Image 1 (cartoon, rainbow, N blue to C red):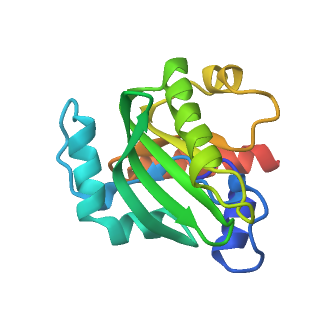
Image 2 (cartoon, rainbow, N blue to C red; image 1 turned 45 degrees about the vertical axis):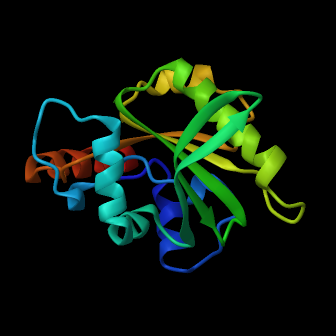
Amino acid sequence: MSNDKESVLAVARNEKQPSDAKEIIKDPMYLEFLGLHREASYYEKDLEQAIITHLHDFLLEMGNGFAFVARQKRLHIEGDEFFIDLVFYNRLLQCFVVIEIKTTKFTHQDIGQLQMYVNYYDRFEKKDFENPTIGILLCAEKNNAVVKISLPENNKTIFASEYKLYLPTEQQLIEEVEKEIEKRV
């Protein structure tokens, strides 16, 4: 159900190496394996803890080449402290991947927070031979138009990806297949 199905599938089948972060970032991500009960809302720390508890499954959902680096990575910047929810490294893209978790709808302010984390990693953690850091804002809901307007037109490093805690129903899958068929006709 990813936005760029063909590239994601080609990378997953090892038919090609990813050349762009868009080829490996899934949107939406299905996190049913976390086993969270259907509730009105979750705290970010609860979702983060569930991801860490099921890290192996989360890495499989993320795709090829991901390795876990840190949780709640502390950044100390001239007396201020910040904490990155999750940090990974992708060996295929040769870059860090920082993930900020939001249990609410995407806001443009979230992009500013994530951009700071990406800038920090690019300036202080990344080695010369590595590619620019990728930032993923993992949010409960997003408006694609707001995401598009919030990011620069030439953006290749910041992504907003919705997460779903439950797989789609049979009816939802049928509707998705029908939409795809209509697009191709």
